[in-house]
Image (cartoon, rainbow, N blue to C red; front, side):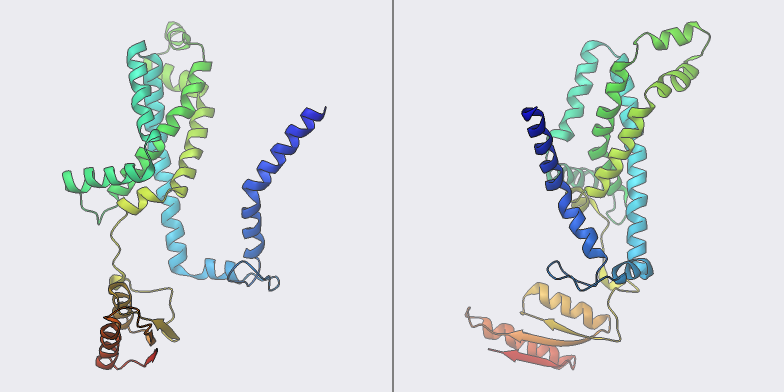
Length: 287
């Protein structure tokens, strides 16, 4: 009795550990707070912003479309591979199982970088297309779809296919009306798992995503009718950000803080000052 109670308590603690952060985010999503720390009362401000901002809706729609497409391709490949492995010989099945473990054992960053090199460097695929991203995420998800379908095949009577043929089905009917129907729960599970993996993926998307040029974006999440305080250190990244905002005609006020930690700190200050003077930008400096 005590052991059983302890097991349930441990399981409860595990679920609390996994889902408590999600519950906290859900609670804060219904407030006007911009960060976790202080609840400012009930508000639907975040959801209004989410469903009224075209850029956010476009990003969400593109993400879901990518996830569904990747899940379809991964489930198709995983199902074909699982059926082939199940009905192949012992050595062929073991070989397919071994090859399926490679993308799973590899770290995502390795898989993403490998797909990037293979598709873009060796095959010359243009990164302005979504093909490298689609292939990369399919390589990630297909092995998990394979593992979802294979157990359902092993639970099935291995002679079911031949029995369907003996009862008058042709090969296509035996496959679709008998085998696929028997393993449909595994196919559904593989599809949903692939959708989840696609939405959760970061590293493969980072290496294979379509090139994004902020200067070619017609609209932005920033409001051009508002003023923005921009801290510019004088480094390459901050100067590139400032130049992008200026070219997009945003109303910016530039701030620079000179800590005098480096010998060329004054050169950074002069660089930012010169840029602001040339573009007639308000500039403030502190030392």
